Length: 143
Length: 278
Image (cartoon, rainbow over all chains, first blue to last red; front, top):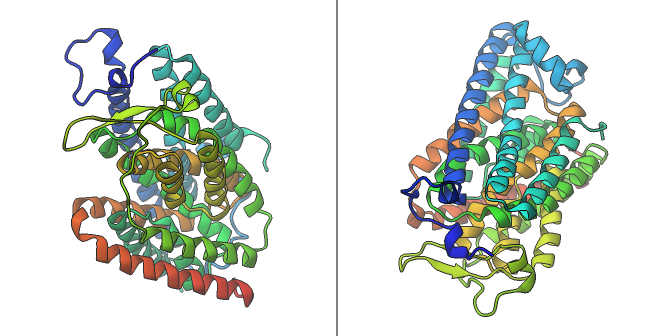
């Protein structure tokens, strides 16, 4: 069994043997940078869609007490992507929001891979359960 | 009111919620939902849907900064996420069915508890002594950096912490907040994880938890682009600015003021819920 001191390293490991390259810290740093890029990208998409939305609907009178006009086709992944490619401003915003929701999902997926590289099968299973719950939420029966 | 004006006002409010949430470490979600509900008359479930997305954005965006410090414990986080994501799905399932005024009263109570938690003293008492057998089988014990060099800690009371995390996840899904205050409470008070490790691990868990409930909200139509757009962009910019001007030592009075604001919002939400205005 691994001692805690081995799984923690204050600085990036110098030598590149597979054993210490995939320490928690390194993997976390890579994932962290990836997530930030994902957030910036989705933020940019939301901003682009938002500007388009304000050009199209900015002058229209609005109130936030009811959203019955919210179209049903923007509630699932497939239609959002299709509509966004038709430059529908609301679908573009929704696409950016979907990408944001995807960032933690990607994080869990990377953790599965990282645990597998460390041959920590117990945590491969734990991360797989979390991933399955997220998939159920996004693609399972509508609750 | 024209859409342009409304979007800009919501953006401005979200910006300040994100700024304050990041400066005090309490997160923007606890302010953004009452703001949308009380000031703009938004249905609480649409407000929660928009808030969830902003919670994910700040959690994922801050991940890189947090991991650099070397505190977060990915095994504790991943294991407890089984509980928080399952709880989040239950919370979201209930939220889309519950009467809005009942949700408002629950939200008010949670706000008041959060305010009280925010002013509690942070005691640094990591678990020492003999390792807990379940925690060591789950490889949760680890080391964290201190001024005196790396220090090891032993995690305790895993089943109690797991149960509390299910509750924290349910609150997150029900109200659309990160419920970081409850996650940190379970980690540092129950499981005896050092405070710094608790807060960074909690940040890591918040995004995954919020994503689990966001899926349910999205498919029930409670995530709407016109509202979520200004909320996400505002909270994101506010929290980024917050981390730049953050001086931890001087945030005590800020936390106190923010705590009082949250307390007032909580009372207002409960009042609104009982008088049927929500």
